[in-house]
Length: 299
Image (cartoon, rainbow, N blue to C red):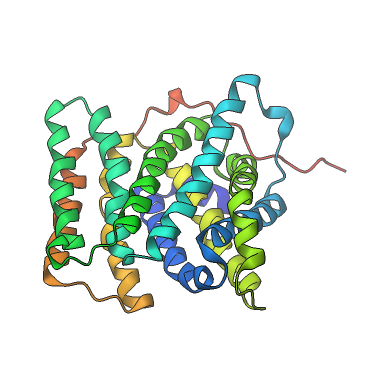
C-alpha cells in the first residue's frame, strides 16, 4: 500500500484533527519569529518557504488550470495569506486560545448560515458569549486591536473553508496548495518584506520559519484540503469546534499561557456552540472532480 493510498484509507476526521493540531502548533511556534520580524514578515516567510517545499513535492501542473479555476485559486491564495498574517497579529497581542476562539466565529457563522436548520444561527450567539468570557472585558485589560485582528482572521477563515473545498474538488491536496500558496506569498509580500527587512533579523529566523512552514502550510493545509474533499461543511465545522481547545492546549504547553476559570468556561461554550451548530457527514464522491498529482515523465 502506497503512502497516498494509506492517507485516503484513513477516516476524514483523523485528517482534520491532525491538521488542527499542526496549525495550532505552528501558531505557537511562530510567536518567537513574530517578535523578530513581525506578524506580516512571519506569514510571508512561512508562505515563501511553503512554496519551496510544495514545489519539491509536487511541481504545479499549470496546464491543468482552466480559465474558470483562476478566480478561485487567486481568492484562496489571498485569503490564506492574510488569514495567517492577521491571526499572527492577533496572537502578538492576545493569548493564543482566545485568538483562536474569536477567529473561530468566522467559520462557525458560515457553517450556521449554510445549515438547513435556521435554529443553527443561535450557536454563533452562544459562541460570542464564550468569547466575552475569554476576553474578560470587565477587567478593562482587553486588547481591542488584537480582537479586531482575530475577527479579520476569522473572516478569512470562513472564506478559506468555502474556497478550499471548491479548489479541492478540482485539484488534489498538494497539487492545489502548490498553486495557491505562491499567490499567498505574493499577496503578503507588501507587508511581509518591509517587516522582515526592518525587523530584528537574526540567523535562526530563516530555519525556524522554514520548519514552521513545513508544518503549516504544507502538512496542515494539505490535510485540511484532503479532509474537505470527503466531508460536508457541517461535518468539518463540527470537528473545527475543537480547535479553540487545541489553541488553549498549545498556548499552555508551548507559551505557558494559563487560562482562568472564566476563560475555561468560555472555551467550553465555544466548543459546544461549534458542535451544536452543525450536523452532517461524508460528501458524495460523485460530486468531486479531482485532478491527480503531476507525475514524472517515463524515461
